[in-house]
Image (cartoon, rainbow, N blue to C red; front, side):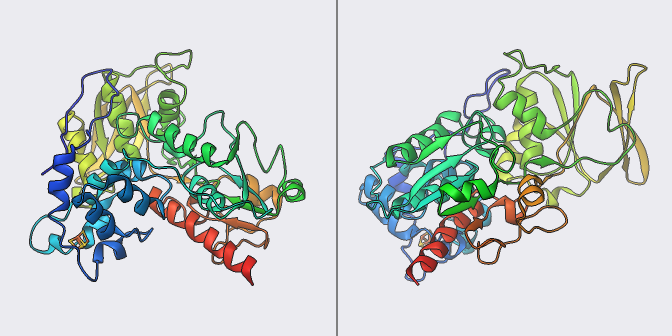
Length: 422
Ligand code: SF4
């Protein structure tokens, strides 16, 4: 049994995948074997007690199921939507050996509709500053608060949620879902401060005067660009810029400039390329994703790939970008690829580059926190070169998944607890 999938119309950014009903959830849960040695749990970076929460659904104890997931996860409503379960828990499910795996992601999303208040220990008197409100920051803040720390989250943007907000479109992850996670943390007592650029406006040393510990979840949000001729032309955008304009600044229904292209080439094969392509389809563009490898190496989720094809996104594989051509006004009019040893010109009036992101240099460069040459922060078991500063998520890994960042947040707090108890 599958969750209902619909393909939306032009200009419609409403969520594509729908919730399942109680009857469907109970039916899906009855397919689980409640294994003694649950491989699904081993496949989950957060090691959520999956058979236990599925058993609770079987008994129609939905709030208890939520409590079980919430022991490890700050955001089941997000993970149930965007985690690549086909590569983690569902990939390990024994049911998958002879047929379909248990639909753990669909069940997690279902359970997230049955929220219960989160218990918080009384204050231990220690103050922690969390830098960044993306997945690592929110996961750290959640587990720190549960342990009784006083937690303040600093966000450089005017909106909270980091990549969950600026990177993932409404049709995959509605903003209200992320807002609900923030409200939950606020209700637990976490303080949020927006428009504060830690590392520049306030340095790490200044922060240390007011906080006992600092958790860095600064992500990896600086887009990588190609070094091919024409890349600086008008209407060549990084996918990050495009998605930020649409997701955060509400283009094209705002003052934010965004020319709606007629024909677009998106270069890349990951989820970000797919999100950019599907967003542009909703604005009425004819979109082609060009990927330098073959279909089997696509990095986007299979489900998203299938949705993109249903929404008439075109795909060209084994296409190596060569150059971008322009008209006399330096506006893009063609993108040239090497395909099967021949140069092919694809007409387009916009090129979106989605070949990954790298790290912001601000904190390592200006604040003495050790990093590699690409400003990826170095951390040993989540502790950086400064013993009062912890880090995780994309800031220490590079481009990782939401669930990996959530796992880092949990483990970094566990590490701090070990240090404090010594
Ligand atoms: S491995 Fe699959 S069948 Fe076994 S407990 Fe996990 S979800 Fe259920």
